[in-house]
Length: 357
Length: 152
Image (cartoon, rainbow over all chains, first blue to last red; front, top):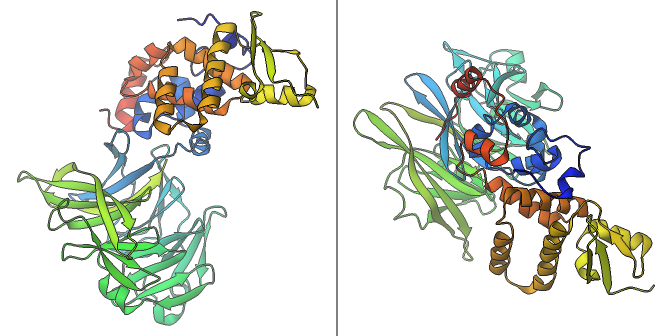
């Protein structure tokens, strides 16, 4: 296979290590467009491809070319261990990932760019300050700077590319109290305490979400709102407190959660109202056990646990496109829905989050 | 300023292409030449592109100029047929599009080449793009095991 034209021969000045007869910068533009789910195959083509796919430049080019794809990262507890998976799109393939090196119970999760931060959690009943980082680009774990205090069941949220984490620690000492909330700036690479009023320092957090640059963290009773931009703390409305159940996600400024009556509801922060996400009656089972949600590229993705064949249970997934109706209502339509994973009975969905890679 | 309506391009192998100025302006490289020198009736050499490739590139430029009002469906169908070509032809086209700086054509061909990876095993990808496998058998097996990624 040789090119008879003068076009390729004229470019002898640049090297063609990636694809014979194509300059590397052009070849790179082609390879960078290949969907994420095909990358495992590209890694095995040859050494130069493996090396380019293991470079951050490759992912910068994907970003510049607007080829980043949102993938769903899923963490499942199976027999006391945590298993990690990624659900890539186009074609939709679920692939296992290496698990975090030191698994803990009740870690908080946050994503910045293409990295997932696993914050604290308890190891042998002791709350840990360890931060484990998964680089979704290279499928690699690394340790991050430790938090100032150990935490389990903390709330975490990302605003302006900084991670805010709060709660999940006893405030029995001055240091723990002063660091009840702290912030991590990846650019600076370290944690710093965030001042918080005494009355908001609840210990356990069971849910958190970021809506319009404000972090909402729900404690056992009541919850707190923190706005990093103004460093202001507040309480959440009773309406939100009473309606928020389980793991939530935010799509287009609306906070969604599953209400245990079998409905997905969205809370419009501006109106202070819960609204049912309509249009899903036929597409979803009556009850979604362990419902967990994430915003994947603007669509709401919900995962749930279902019965399998006796020894195994199934984890199912539905992607829902959401439309805000002119009357203010919320209407969803199911883009696709399928069983994505079979796991031993007794397993549970721990968390899911979306990352663009 | 005397604008000529027609522009003459000369391919690497000496063939002349007389085309509408508007067609030529889709190439930013040509656009700069015209702006800089404003050659009246002059011949613009395109030393990096041969006649066969240049005629194909100009076919693209003409289509995309004339059919600005065509709806998206027709447009993408035409584009799809346009890049339904042998690999070496795509290489020549992308090199020409790169040299002439026609971003939508670069995008179109890159997307086409990227789509050729679809559903292909590493072996098949090497075959299509004429790439040597420089991994040892052990390395290959090791990567498959270690990466933990699913191969479906």
